[in-house]
Length: 273
Image 1 (tube, rainbow, N blue to C red):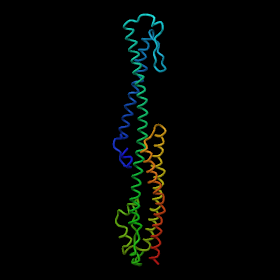
Image 2 (cartoon, one colour; image 1 turned 30 degrees about the vertical axis):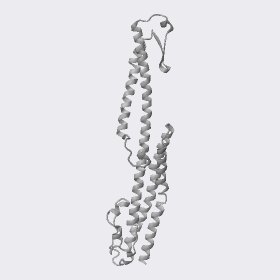
Image 3 (tube, rainbow, N blue to C red; image 1 turned 135 degrees about the vertical axis):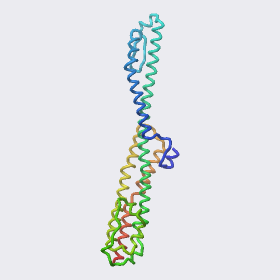
Image 4 (cartoon, rainbow, N blue to C red; image 1 turned 90 degrees about the vertical axis):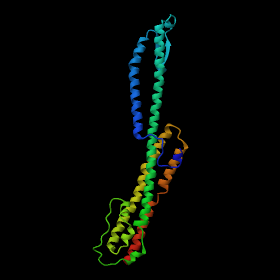
């Protein structure tokens, strides 16, 4: 719980999906073997003791026939009854344990679903904020030196190509050095402004995807846990933090990035005039 309270991305001690699947497989094997024994060997024991005792299946309670209690039982009969009673009692305990184990494994699967979405939510939020900082500091940053750009040889100028993501252009080098280079023309500035607008809009899509994707899935998984069992307050508080940080605080990112682009466009137009 200390890791959950700190909103840590990694919580030690939880099984992996592979380990959980191994537990489920082991449980299924035991359950199958128990079923085979119940319908096989135990049925034989019941048949052997049929003349001595009556088995009431509901609750696995056993009652001796009145006729059987009125006569002396041989040691073999007594041993057989004791063996049957003990076997049925132990089988009943095993079935209860298997049911509890099945419930626990299902709970763990839901917990892992919540954990996976919670972790993914924090990671995506961190990536969005890092990309936002890079976008604001590098690609959307405007400098007064843009006024010094020459207005000739405009047609031969080229805008840097975009390679798939917001961070990719920034990773190719400082956008300041590209925008403020002597070869960066008015037409190139216009093309870059279009790319900036497109990338700014992507922030809105990413926040929306985060809200309706991982954060929503985490909330649904936690609701399933709550429906089955009392959930520690630390998990409820963590879900609240996740929703506040990933939804509430990122709500206006799209407007902010678009305003940066509009500002860049404004100063770019002024520089052309």
